[in-house]
Length: 220
Ligand code: DX5
Ligand code: ZN
Image 1 (tube, rainbow, N blue to C red):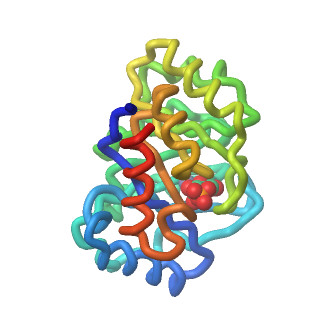
Image 2 (image 1 turned 135 degrees about the vertical axis):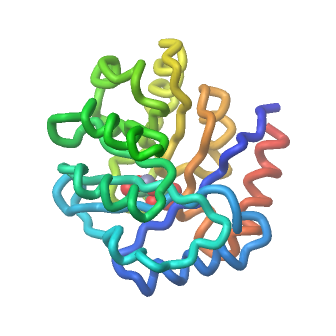
C-alpha cells in the first residue's frame, strides 16, 4: 500500500474566464475539493504553444477556502510572479526552461512569502536543477510536455522522480501532467509528495473522480 498524499491538487487550465469560472465553481461546490490547493495554469504562447487567462483576470474572484498555486508556463516570469504575489498566490511554480535569472525569480517568490517551485519538462535533464537544489522549496516534475490537458503520460517521468529523490535535495516533489488513477500509485512509490490532476479530476464530477483515485491508491 502506498501512502495517500496530503496534497491531491485539481488543475484548472482555461483559455477564457468563463471556462475558468465553470471549473472553479465545480471545486467550490464539491464536498472533497473545496479546500486545500487549486493549481492554476498560466501560459504565454512562447514557452508553450498555448495561451490562457492572465493573473489579472482573477482579481476580485472569490476562491473561498482554496489556496492558490500558480503554474507559470512562461518564458519571462518576473511580471507574472509579481502579479501573482499581489493576488495572494501562496505557491508559485516557474520553469527551469524560462529565461535567465532563475535564482532571482526564486528569491522574488520567497521575498513575497510564497513557496517557490521549479518545474522541469520531460526533455530537460535534472542536471539543470542542481544549482538551485538548495534554495528552491519544491520541484515539479512534468509528466507531459506542458501546454494542454489530457495528453498521454511520458513513462520516463517515473525514472526522473526516482532520480531526484535519490539526490537527497531538501525539496518536496510535485508531479503534474497526465496523472490519473492508473499511474498515481507508481508516481507516489517513486517519491512524489503531491499530485496535480487536470482532466482526471475536473472532467465530470470531481468528488466521484477523487473517490475513484483514493480507492485505487488504497488498493495499490
Ligand atoms: C499542462 C498543465 C497541467 C494540466 C494537467 O500543461 O501544466 O497542469 O492542467 O492536466 P492533465 O492532468 O489533464 O494532464
Ligand atoms: Zn500545471
